[in-house]
Amino acid sequence: MDSDPSPVRVVLITHPIEGAEGFAKRLVEERLAACVSMHRVESVYRWEGQLESSPEMQLVPKTQQDKLEPLEAFLEREHPYQVPECVVLATQHVEAEYAAWLRGAL
Image 1 (tube, rainbow, N blue to C red):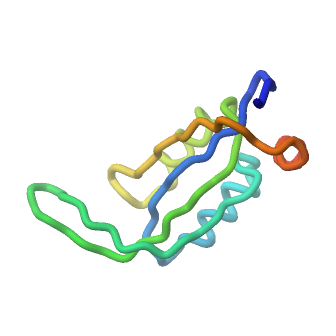
Image 2: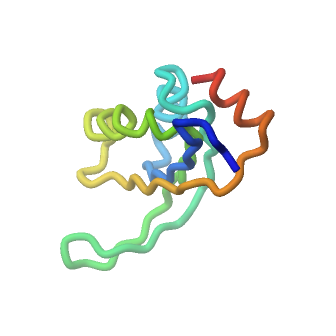
Image 3: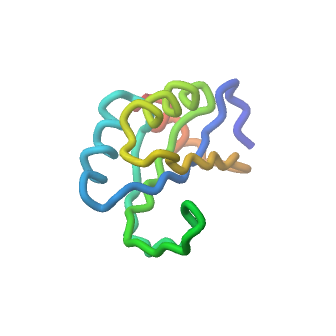
């Protein structure tokens, strides 16, 4: 179990395919995330009363609890969507060496 006062968190963010890599790099450059995995997905959702479907990138930043507030502020300021996804997942276990690397990268 991770006993650090600022535990590791995994965040889910969708982003248009265009610009997603640059957005992910900025999260790491600004030390809001230690790394960001990127996965192409097809999202189906309801927007303004209409059923929509679109290809997107699922960005998965790995970060710490104490970085969530500035990460959310970054999303509000820089994300192209009117309502960007920001789902934070609590970690039950993070391997010690990986957690140490992550903290050092932030």
